[in-house]
Image 1: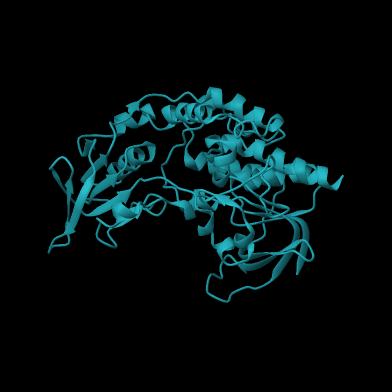
Image 2 (image 1 turned 30 degrees about the vertical axis):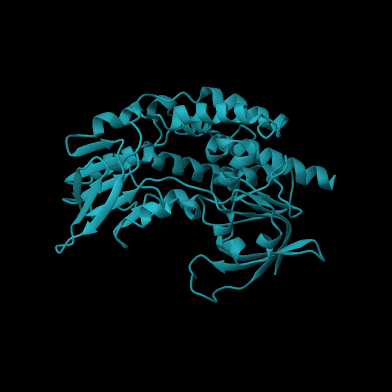
Amino acid sequence: MRETNLLIIGAGPFGLALAAQVAHAGINHLVVGKPMEFWRGNMPQGMFLRSACDWHLDPLNIHTIEAFLRSKGKSRHDVEPLSLDFYLSYAEWFQQEKKIRPLPLYIRQLDYDAATQEFIAVTEQWQEQTAGAGGDTIRAKNVVLAPGFKHFAHVPEDLKSRLPLGRFQHTAEFVDFTTAPKSRYLIIGGRQSAFEWAALLIESGASAVHLSHRHPSPAFAESDWSWVNALVEGIVDNPNWFRRLSDDEKNANIQRLWAEGRLKVEPWLEPRLNERVKFWPQTEVISCLQNDTGELVAELSNGETVECDQIVLATGYKVDISKLPVLAAGNILKQLETRNGFPVLDDHFETSVPRFFITSLPATQDFGPFFAFTIAVRASAQLICDRIVNRES
């Protein structure tokens, strides 16, 4: 049995930033989870990020990416665009500098005890993923859930029904390209991840990659994220800014971010896509059959057919908070107010369950689409920490 004031579930960017902030505030806390697990296990080697050096993790603005670069004798011009490997090395340095030491545990089940107003978390070791392993408990006054994207991978049911079972994978799962040489792929999707997976597959030896998407192909153009910084920083002082916008104003902000993130793909991808990549804009797969030789034959809505060995779904992510195993196993879902699959959050990310906070992608409905990106980790950490500190002062 362990006891703590605050239990942080998740050691990705949102969890690490929060751990740094609450340590600075002197809040007794525990962090559980593998550091940067989704980034390490569900993103491919060779991937580049769309963010720049200003999207760092430190709410105190000390252990920034720029500071990390200075410690290495480098400048931002040496590392942008940021590679996945570089960002992981920065996160590891940040963790060391902040002395963040996550416990080697997962939370198997989380319950809220209304009588004691405490949370009871049942743990299991990282290496013990079989049923019944672990079983130690942590009691906490406050809990913050900072989930990765893994459990929100979106596979549309109508699309799934048209594809042979076992012959498709979402990009969140398909990150090992060792089988790519001489293989043919059909990627369904037409945004940044689809184009980047296509480039990585070609560079891994794929003989052909087809991209089918229902919209026109996006432009190869550099995205302008500069306007996002001020908006997210302003949310610290005005946390209900987004939720108080009219529907038209919300849509305008969403569309502006959409235009940068979805209507463009990074220009450094264009020279990496050679003649082995075939684009099929404004099409969708209407059927797909496996023939006697195991080959997949997909029929597109424009009447063309594509022959391939594997299908990759670059179909994004969609929040359904009930899909998180840690919640599904306990009693919190029964008490949690939700809307459209998202948790309903107040100005400090607190849910309808007292002292239970949720951030990261599930916060986008109430705080805006920016909270699907690492630009928002610092604002999230400050607002959650402020609530806990003010409640106890």
